[in-house]
Image (tube, rainbow over all chains, first blue to last red; front, top):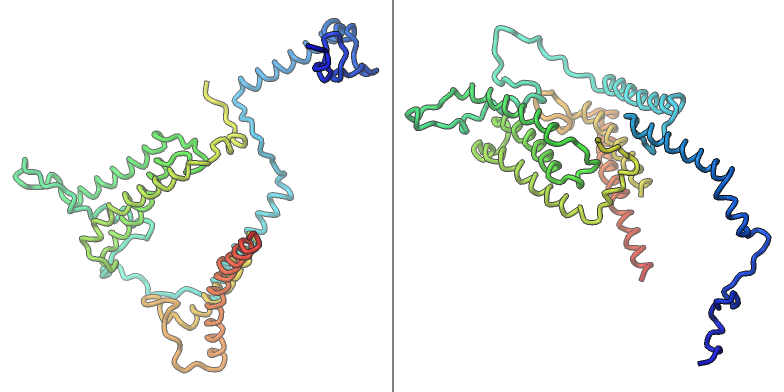
Length: 255
Length: 86
């Protein structure tokens, strides 16, 4: 064994190709020691203590730290809002000038119209009054129903509104995207579809579908839509960056 | 891609608004029956005939314009990009 094999490696005596000669900027061993004590040490401890106190204050407060930039109200926000407001006001004026609504006859309080319907946004409640086929005939009561169909419809309203009121307590809404919680997204899709189908059931005389088929579809379509959306969102979870929004909506965990 | 979407959306909404107004004038006999899809007036005057022709043109401009900018042009670009990649 000769020294010829070691010519490319750094030697323990300080010589060799890997050693860089010290220049003027390289601190000496004496300078390095001075930086870890005395005034430099005092300065370091001062700033470190200030930083720690600031961190403790921010963690104790309820202040929510966000990376989102804010913009001044004037002119940024107000110019945008004025543009949007002008557009919609102009659209209202244009449509009311070009397409004035028909002036119908005055309502006659002494005659009942042939078709009685609430406003369209109350069709869901009106449809819940038509759940008579679901009202069970109890054999304990000799095949009679425990409550009348109209009472059953009112109770169905209470049940549905109660379920809707419970959802915010069951799910806190911490997800930023439907993919993050596919089950609850599917519940929401099913609820929206049920609102549409129960509204269609309310006007079943006007819907060109067989009444019994419409009644079955009212309860089957929400389940089908919820299942499909659950499957789709579950398959979309692969590759989704769950930490993507955490950086922008950084909420402190509860203590 | 966003530019093409905005062009298609502008054509769709703008031409659709003109079609809506003209169809409301000439194809809505009453609010009790079919609205915007009623029959054309049987004996249109000169201005009515012009307006009805404009209404039909606006309808097809809305449909074909949106189809062009939302489907045809992006699909053509995809095809061209895949052709270039080979």
